Image (cartoon, rainbow, N blue to C red):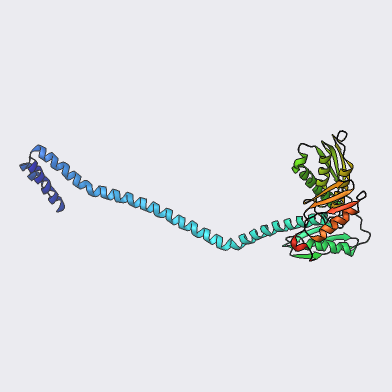
Length: 338
């Protein structure tokens, strides 16, 4: 049975290739009904093969066409973007540089105005500042050539300034601006107050002590209460060591002043230290001063022989000092021969 079906299928395939002229009546003479049915089904499958291939090719063609359209659209978009950048690139660069220059000019203008306001000579007068690509222009009125020159020098020393156009007009009757006058001094006082407060907070000898500070015209006023006279003195010396301080008013009260009053020798040593610091040429960080019945002893290290001699001379000038013993160490290279 199977051999006959295979033979029939083969014969049918051969007939299909030759134009499908196979005669079904002839096959009925040799095959049974079941074989005939199998043969018919096989022939139908053979006929549908070209149709399936054609449909599959059609679908593949549609997919291929869709992908090609997407690729073409991407190419068009890229070409359009490239063309836009080529034509607009100069405008974009110009806009970027404009924003950058404007930001830098604004920063330069701010720096110049701040510098002028910090000058006690220039701050009382209204001066207009404009900056264009690093070129600063000053407009306004000042009472003298000296103040105009000072303003110009301040501007030229400010970071970011490439060129200066000093258009300030000299007018001896120019009035001073009370709001800006003395601003530089107020800023200096604020800086000193901040540095003194910071120094007091970092002084281990003054831990947990509440000391008030006030600064006016570079003079520091200390107020509050400390435990000992030594703490009172330490606070005063801390204030003196801040750069720019021109005077210290010590209104601190020592809690044990009545039970442990400061001795005459301690007071004398403190007066000597005060005079040494007032010279602004002697560092007390590496020097100690001791007093005993009018005899002052200087110990520690100094940077030069001249500093040692100045310290000794200054100590001798203090009222109450009878004699000065100078044991300050000087570097070998600073000692003069003989």
